[in-house]
Amino acid sequence: MLDAGMKSQLKTYLENLRTPIELVAYVDDQPKSKELIGLLEDIADVSDKVSMSLSQSNADKRVPSFDIVRSDDASKAVTFAGLPMGHEFTSLVLALLQVGGHPPRVEQDVLDQIAALEFDKEMQFETYFSLSCQNCPDVVQALNLIAIFNPKVSHVAIDGALFKEEVENRKVMAVPTVLLNGEAFSQGRMGLEEILAKIDTGAAARDAEKLGAKSAFDVLVVGGGPAGASAAIYAARKGINTGVVAERFGGQVLDTMGIENFISVQHTEGPKLAAQLEQHVKDYDVDIMNVQKAKELVPASAPGGLIEVKLENGASLKSRTVVLATGARWRQMGVPGEEEYRNKGVAYCPHCDGPLFKGKPVAVIGGGNSGVEAAIDLAGIVSHVTLIEFAPEMRADEVLQRKLRSLSNVKIITNAQTTEVLGDGSKVTGLIYKDRSNDTDHEVKLDGIFVQIGLVPNTEWLKGTLDMTRYGEIEVNAKGETSLPGVMAAGDCTTVPYKQIVIAMGEGSKAALSAFDYMIRSSAPADVAAA
Image (cartoon, rainbow, N blue to C red; front, side, top):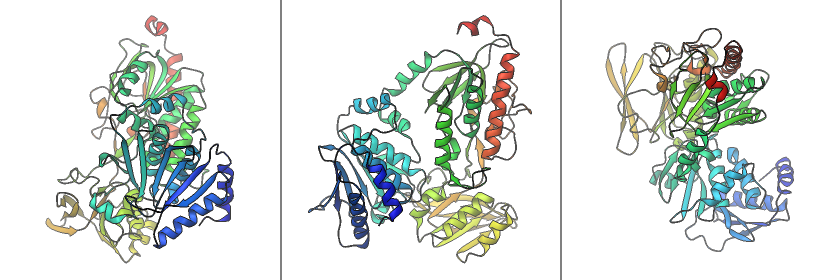
């Protein structure tokens, strides 16, 4: 199952096992079961601390699946249903190591928080993933870790493409989808800190108290995407007190599959780049406050005074300068049925959710590069793709358009406006679009709709505080300065054109340098010096 190179690499990893582990397989005579047995035998072959056995009973177990169990403590265990290859192979390797006693790369206070969690009943998590989903591993790895370090928590990671009947019965139409004790828990990317914040009811109050006790920063960056990370690094290199408050570190980059235009790096993937950004920031003395959402910006009461950022958990942070780098999110169509069927056929990530629509007809809304790339990718998975573009012509690069037109299972409709998403109450069944040339309505029957119509800035919380365009973009000058003294802005949330990672990084660096320049040219009043 594993080639020689992968086995050699795995052997090196498994030398870190401290305690023997057992792989218990639940299989039958289907081809996937044979593949699973081959995978587990390969794993057992490379380490004398790993044993493998076939269960004599498959009752109440998904087939094929397997448990990873610590030999001296059966409570240290996780389960994979299917073959965790592709993006999930890393999840498998980490599960092997962590069940086997190798310490995870997580702060000790986080592990202590996990171990201290108390529940009235067993917490049984189930995560549906697809092997092509770049967002799924974070969820799988986080829940595996919680299950390993808290005996009242169990976790099963399930390949949705392999258990199609189960996926359809449970109406799973987006990955990652997490169920807790059989009920919906979450959909979409979540990190360990986000999951803990959701299940640890006292976490928000503790965080608010801890954050509220912090001294004022010199530079406070709001946002943890490429612009925010660059701003934090450039500020910290000046030797000034720097903090980053972010809803999720990595931002929109986390949802990006292939990145091939990041200069000097021929190819990388969003989650990998996001992890590298965070590690680079951590290399400096930067206070990272993750899973925190800003709700209000209070300007300084006097020139050179402290600026306040209020958070949704009730905490308040103060700083001499602020860099706003809140990024943007996928733009929605804003038509009837879209919100109702979100994650029930309406999706925004073709790489993540595409495999769930294998052999089914879908639509892609948007004829820019993102839309055309999505249609090309989906055409290799689904039965048919209908691409709908509002303008009379597609806006994507010509090379992408040529590729799209060469595909036999793609239909392109231009000069059309999607007006409604149709469904049966539980899932999408089609859409209605208006032909803009003659105002006639047309219905398209399909099972999925992938929306790719651009971005909207995350700036609603700033409305009325500083100057913004009617599109919600923060107005900045050539130095990244906003209309408020001491407040800079950078990245996709600003008026700077061309929303690209490399541009956001440059703008974040510029904003930090502008913040430093502002401080050295401003006299600090007594309240700042005392903070």
